[in-house]
Amino acid sequence: KAGVTQTPRYLIKTRGQQVTLSCSPISGHRSVSWYQQTPGQGLQFLFEYFSETQRNKGNFPGRFSGRQFSNSRSEMNVSTLELGDSALYLCASSGGTATDTQYFGPGTRLTVL
Amino acid sequence: DAKTTQPPSMDCAEGRAANLPCNHSTISGNEYVYWYRQIHSQGPQYIIHGLKNNETNEMASLIITEDRKSSTLILPHATLRDTAVYYCIVRYLTGNQFYFGTGTSLTVIP
Image 1 (cartoon, chains in turn red, blue):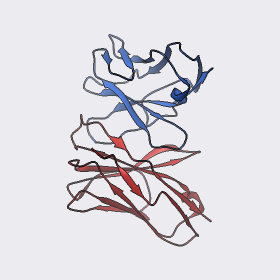
Image 2: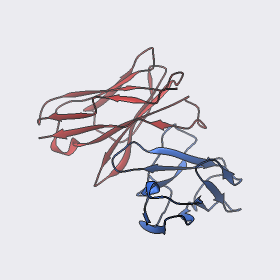
Image 3: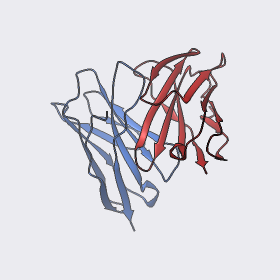
């Protein structure tokens, strides 16, 4: 099976802009979770989508949003970018139950100037 | 919040076993212990997970103490490619999310 893919791999934006990142899960997986990784805060959970519905949400401001399509592909959007949003954004897919293993994609490196 | 404690860094000689400890003293009865590793800015790679019994796969072994308050990940014959940050995670059953701690930076020395 193909692994989790994320596009784009690298992105440079300026403050105030918005950005959309895409994640394609492993075939058959219905859950997609998003994480933010920064040197200061480490890996932090953003939110999880399952069957096109947000099922869990981390402690991030409303500027961070996401959605999931019927084919389980997911997008996350960050509006009004701030310098502190510079990070590696990772998505992980799984079958969706509490015991299913999550498999991570390679990440999208976002730089905000 | 992360429910695990790991040493920040460890060294291991190439070819020797690497033993990475993790403390999870507040783990609940049905919560699993997962191990992932991350090689410089790549996505975390799944290694192994377990509930109560020791587990082994082609990558590693996981030893969980009887009281489940700690565990050890064993890489039997470390290679230079095993140099990475290793995360021990207790997975909450109430949600499908992982709470990552700070991990252990393992350096395999030639």
